Image (cartoon, rainbow, N blue to C red; front, side):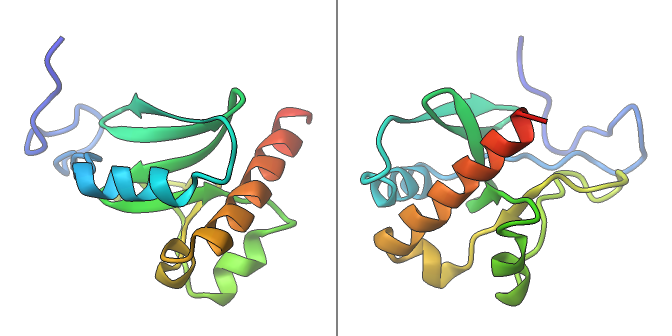
Length: 129
């Protein structure tokens, strides 16, 4: 099945759907930065990329932005840095529990690995509820 063009209108709302596609260099950079986090797998997901560690879904790459899973334990790190939640389509209510990773964290493989480990832990807590 062919993906819908980004300009095609949603059947639910009147705003056009925007592609979640990432550039190949961005995807490669993120995967490289996460090299110290073992068993990370990137899978195509709704035009974007889902990140998994040992089967645990902990991150989303969409429009060349990395979003990681948050909960009450790690959300404040993102909010204090001014990050915003992942909201794939602006005309739809609600947000997902994934926040944009600050550029300074993204550029440091050590910091990103630490934040990613916290995101995996948040995803595990969410799945155990």
